[in-house]
Amino acid sequence: MSGVALFSCRACGHVWQFRRAMCPACAATDIAVVEAKGGGTVWSATSVHRAPTPDLDVAGGYGIALVTLDEGPRIMARAPTDLVIGERVTVRAENGLPTIFRA
Amino acid sequence: MAYLTGIGITAYGKHPGLQPLDLMEQAVLAALADSGLQRDALDGLITGYATTHPHLMMGTVVCERLGLKPRHAHQAQCGGATGAMALVLARHLIAAGACRHVLVVGGENRLTGQSRDDAVKTLATVGHPEHEVPLGASIPAYYALLAARYLHETGANEAELAELAVLMRRHALGHPLAQLRKAITVEDVMASKPVSTPLKLLDCCPITDGGAAVIVSAEPLAKAAIKLTGWGEAHTHQHVSEIPDDLGLGARIAGAAAFETAGRKPADVGLLGIYDSFTPTLAIFLEALGFAPPGGAGRAAREGRFGRDGALPLNLHGGLLSFGHPGVAGFMAHVVEVVGQMRGEAGNRQVRDAPLAYCHADGGTLSSHVGFVLERLS
Image (cartoon, rainbow over all chains, first blue to last red; front, side, top):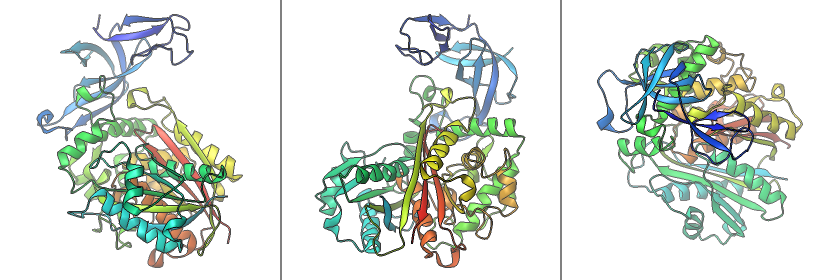
């Protein structure tokens, strides 16, 4: 399992990442916490060469991607800098941050 | 019902020593002079926020500074769409009979009032505090993710996006108040420093000091009658993680509502003021709104479609990308330019007759959209 927590609506089956008491799709309030299995597809990716704070700057940049998990939601994760959109990847929580590994 | 009767703007760039209130005041004095109104005729005020002067009640702070005693005043916050939102809200206040002359003002010393690192850090906080900011994401990174997706979906390339930066710079060359007035080429954009791939430095708007003000009135005044005839909003998400699959969805919803309210269609438009924080922002909007084919905004720019003599003149002051982006006043400069053009006051930048214009801004990461139609009635 990935260590990445998701929420699932028991009424309509919609799955998402951000904490909420009400399903964004159907407004039901019967919500379960589930864990992402970890499989996903890269929706977009970037390599950051100008970090928001200087202490984060890495020579050659660091990768951030949006990955569409197999459960449905799209989440942001740290990533290799050379990801290609459409690539199959694995997501795992590393030091509390969702991190992408090549499948 | 609601007319844009006064416009005022400062030079954009560096104003060391000037605070947000100084810049707002300069812009308001210019807008008052432009409208011919006496100060005490202003009975409504909507101001923006300033990251260099965080305050819970900027509306009242501005009233006090200007000596205004309005029937309504507040501070609006909707990121880059704040100015557009405030103009539409001013129209609603007038339509409700609450006010007759509403002052909309934004101004900030975003460039000299803080370190560059502080500016970047402040802006990064629009990201999700748990799920995005800790990853080291920044505003350019959020837009870079959208840019990469846009390029993937449309088949457009980075050099075509660069055309939009080149065009904005070409337009800024004609405006004495613009921040960046050194001509650039596609090669310059491509060779500029990577910020967050695929975005290079010249794909990004600069950080700027500046202020702008627009007065919205219940009737036309001394200058040409520029009426706000249509408006629309869309709020599809806040954080880029939750953006809809369709990148253009919010823009399309807001644009369609604006044209429907006005009883017009995009084909009627002869002048554009479109938010351009990054080159992909502009491309996505132009294409979602139907002003360029999918993936074709950059090519259309190269072919002259958005130039002064083209079919759809766009951001003739240079946009955020070259005129500058001091926060709330950033998009207000688009409005000032559009109104000046519609009146025929744009001098060496003047387009042939432009009686109908469309303006569009977003806040966040294509999150909040405000679009509106302006028409010249006399």
